[in-house]
Image (tube, rainbow, N blue to C red; front, side, top):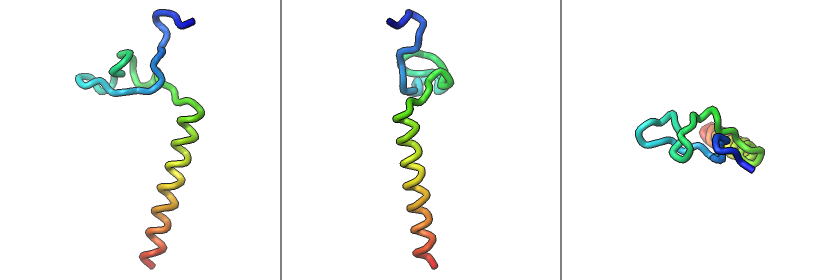
Length: 61
């Protein structure tokens, strides 16, 4: 069970007026931790970007 003060928000969305606070829970970005699935997705995307960039460079040669 979640306590009243516990952060239920898993993904940070910047508030319109204060970009350092979350739109949903008004807590700072530091209190929002990435899940393992999110970290895996970030790794995959960064690898794809790196491969695309290397492919682009090799095509220039």
